[in-house]
Structure formats: structure tokens, C-alpha cells
Image (tube, rainbow, N blue to C red; front, side):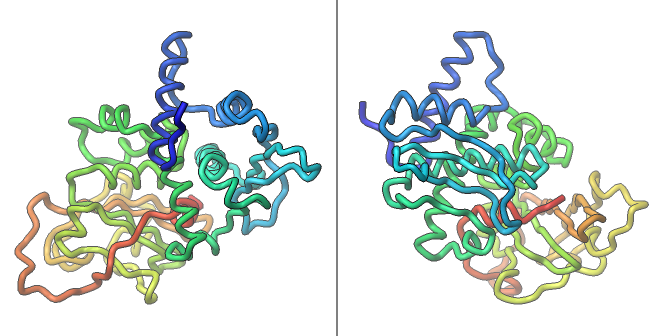
Length: 305
């Protein structure tokens, strides 16, 4: 049997097996339980180097997860996640991410792979590309496109929809929104901020093509003062959101903002939806635009809400 070689290929291959198994046994397809899949599939397909341990351990707070070889030289592998992580969605994504490393990168990294936020942020490096591949695998495995498209078809864009997706696939709200942004025809953006400043953002393809996306990593950018995220007003229904006039967020047009605010760590996650029809920007300035970038795992884990 010829095995896949790409993140998408591996995820689709496993998804087909999972779907067939669950259908044959009358089981719910979602959420996907990564741990038993990792151990059983690796035992059958890679008997000389199976995954025999999937466990949460006390790690430094900078580590999200690890793929590590057994210290006894047996050829076995272990998937480790930081047990300080309490979000089931983050744990599930971490496990899928490390499984992606196992399938794609273990022969390239025989000493294992330790995934930290700082390493993952450097996405243009060779290591960063490796992280992006594992992230892509996890996204396709946990949120297969066929089912994801069915869930969002005909639905209004709302935080309720995003929470439904996060719950269905046992992923973080951030992961669900990022997946939606990858497939939507809407002009939309996610903006994550800490302490009043934009930490990172991600725009849908249509919004990028209309020239709207932040360069938050290259410079310090404060949240717009009159945005829901900037106001941090608990008396407002931030999740339902509001439609701002032009001039609050980037672009010369009105924007609908829906925001989740975490008072605990001064963080916010905003979903911005722009009108379907973009204005003529042939004579507009570049504004806050910069080159679009790949979605990396660092982004996935930065939200702590």
C-alpha cells in the first residue's frame, strides 16, 4: 500500500478509515478521538516504530506538546501534551498536531520534536514550515472538509455557529474560526489581542484580495478604541456583536464585529465580517496591509480564552 506524503493526504487517508469504521459500528464520527487512533494505526502500519504512549505530563509552560522517542532505543514513540492545558479543544488539537509530526517528520527528527510557542512563531524557518505542516494535518483530520462544509452551509455567520463547530470537533474556538476562514467566500478576519494590542490576525482569501489584513507581528498595533474589543464593556452583548461605521476597523466600509473577551488574562478574540462586495481600492492607500502568511500552530495556541 502506498502511503500519503502530504499533511492533507495523511489526514484524508485517516479520515476515510475513521468514517468507515464508525459507520460499520454505528458510532458517532465526531469528535475524533486522536489517542486510540494514534496508537492503533501506528501499531498496525508501523509495527517497528509504534506510538505506545499518549499522556499529559508536567512540562514547562512554554511547551504545548512533544513527539518523543522512547529512551530505551526500542523504536517506540510517545505523544506528550502539557497537562497544565485545561481546554479539551487545545488538548485534542495538540494530540493531532503531534500525530502529524509522527506521520510526516519522525524520520527527519529522530530525537523528537518539542513544540513551543516561540519556535512555532518563526514560521518562515525550516522548523516553522514543519510546524505548519503538522498544523494543517491536525486541521484536516479533526475538521474534515466534507462535514465542515455541511455544518456551515446556509448558516448565518455568528459566534453561536463557531461555538457549535468547536464543540462538534472538540477543537478550540480559534481553530474553528480559522478553518471557517480558510473555506468561506465571506470577507472576514479574526483578530486576537492581549493587553489592548493586536497579537495576530488572519484574513479570508477574499478579504486579502480586497487589501485588508493587519501586519501585527511587524509593529505594535493598538486595538481600535471604539471597537468592542477596545471598549471591553461587559454590559454590551459582545458575542452577538454590532455593526460599526467605516473608520473603526481597517477599510473604508462598515464592519460587523463579534468579540469574545477574557477578563482573566486581558485577551480578546474578534470575528470581523465585512460586506460581501468590496469597494474599489484602485486609488486607496496600502493602509495596514502586508504580505499574507501561512497559518501556523503558534497562532492556533496563542488564544488562552
